[in-house]
Amino acid sequence: MKIAVLGTGSVGRTIAGRLSGLGHDVTVGTRDPQATRARTEPDGTGNPPYSAWAADHDRVRLATLADAAASAELVVNATSGHGALPALEAAGADHLADKVVLDISNPLDFSNGFPPTLFVKDTDSLGEQVQRAFPRARVVKTLNTLTAELMVHPENLGQESSVFVSGDDAAAKATVTELLTSFGHTDVIDLGDITTARGTEMLLPVWLRLMGSLGTAAFNFKVVR
Amino acid sequence: MKIAVLGTGSVGRTIAGRLSGLGHDVTVGTRDPQATRARTEPDGTGNPPYSAWAADHDRVRLATLADAAASAELVVNATSGHGALPALEAAGADHLADKVVLDISNPLDFSNGFPPTLFVKDTDSLGEQVQRAFPRARVVKTLNTLTAELMVHPENLGQESSVFVSGDDAAAKATVTELLTSFGHTDVIDLGDITTARGTEMLLPVWLRLMGSLGTAAFNFKVVR
View 1: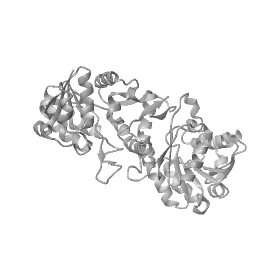
View 2: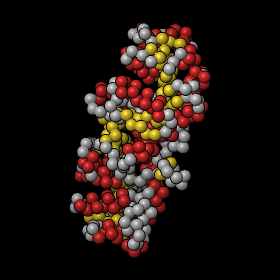
View 3: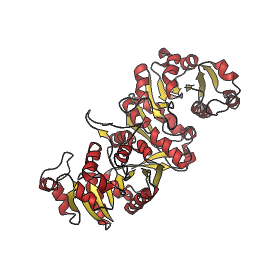
View 4: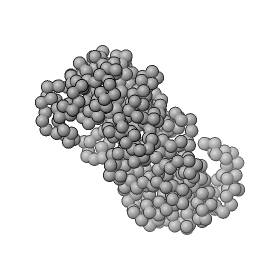
């Protein structure tokens, strides 16, 4: 499948690398590809410069957000929470129309330090904001409840764990569930419509405390039933 | 141990019955014991009248909130979210002083229908509100992330799942962890101080959506790591 991954951070790279490894035709979208390529220092969260990652992933193209989305059949939003709507605006509503938009972003607000709070919650969600802003897109919220490496290699935990899908379009959720299954996920729970993203986005506060308490991000929730 | 359980709903009854069965000396606290005993109709959530439950649990006493708390070594708050602070006020700050207060309540606001929203979240929690209102109490938030029956019989799931403790007092958390272990819990995760209750209280929105999606409350989260 032709897939655009918006975002060059660790989530974007991890998803893009995995999709490419599975044989998909992947383009990473970024605001300014030249600037992204030219960086030689680690980014704000300590990731090596994009060019170092790209050297190991030469089948993954880099393009503007609009160009990446224009040619894609499915668009992954792997930006930060604050970056989500601006990136999707730059990608262009027409380039998202009728496409599955797999949204991983979390509405984390770091302005008051760590742990972050949520800039939208409880009566609304970032997933819903994205769906409202792009009504022709078929938004599916998923993978926002675990660390990047486990999104694409859940078997690394050695035990089954769960991921969730939220969205208004059943066929879009089926497409996303197929992708998740190809990553190795064996327990994909359909929570319902896009408003159920409130639930998974509000998992972040306990996820962050667990990371602190366990001293690792290498964990995930299994819904035991 | 002499234990007061504040609240006569399904959580209060389930905890009180289990503690009594384990040999503890349990008193349930309610605003008006005579009125509680006199009711002959199911309560607002469909529980049978308290007297029917009490007939099967004759070692569990019923008393006012203040009397129950006064004679207890440990106090369980098993009220609704809105009921928590009023019930603890009625129990009396002096009767809570230096005692472990095991708080199960969730800040659920049903005023806009189902699923409920949270009346405190993200930058504060009900657990913290209780601790601030009763600074001499040793508050431990726990068990608010699963259905009543599984709180006291986690083995019913057939697989290990996790519960969490949040509180400022390490000895209080150790006491609560011992109780949880006696209920059958084998994975008790200490999240840290009472502010980490923000995390577990914010689990409720996804818990509620899972209940809808799975069609049952008989599930729990296991933190796989």
